[in-house]
Length: 400
Image (cartoon, rainbow, N blue to C red; front, side):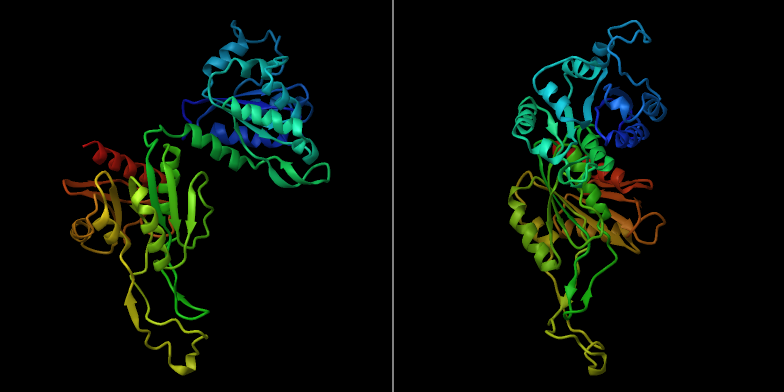
């Protein structure tokens, strides 16, 4: 329920993609938002007001002069309630009206009265979208503070292929959550997060790695970004989709991650080292596949990798704060406190792989947050919520 107590005005205009807006309205409502749909008369030719009323539980407004509402100037009342305006899909016609301050229907009249943040998702034929007039109107909306969500490229309803395709509701949802889900208490901070496993090559076919999926690090990046931070995510190989709105730096080996982190470290304020970096790598990488018959797999000489956390901890400047991670199978507090001191970290997020709901490949985690002054045991929660707890603990340290 990341959008609980938030009011969103969803404007839907006359595009064939209007039916997808119903799925978006449903997703927003499921996250706790009060979604008021403003449907243009041409939009109502593609999807009916009843559809939006069914998924949002709110009246869908079409007619500016509809008398079936409580006694107030409705477009002004809606404008005052709104935390966000999202026009999706937006036709070239509606874009032109909004860019030039025209207000001749309920949608444009209400939006003109709104002082809240505004987003718009164009959806139209490629030639219409690329027309200089449309591009000028979009540039004008950006100038006035609108967030323009670029359309996707692909096959359009008219049969053409190109830009102008309506973005998927999941992506639009990410834009809304980026704006509304969290307080912007990390605005102005630069954050570096590491995530995922590393892969240490043995030969052209094989590598050494671990079970990390990258989820904890990805949720740390997502949470910090939604709270206003400028996030750099250094990630090892992962099948997870990258969090939007962050600078992703993909790497493969521990050495590549070390180089990427140490290069970016001087400019960062906060660090969260959630990656499961290999402790060792093969001493030699074979140029050809090692055959089983040769016996080369029976004993693989290993050498230590460079310790990223310890290196950054030793070099951190005043004002920089570091969170390390400790995954243990026994002596959780004892081993994690040793790591806190040895690595010169400010916080260790520790978990026990044997505890149900913690560890690799799960949507949840069970963490203990360890600082020089004590330890806080957290209950099982989603990794996104756990990420929020970690950043809040870091901000608390920063304030002291």
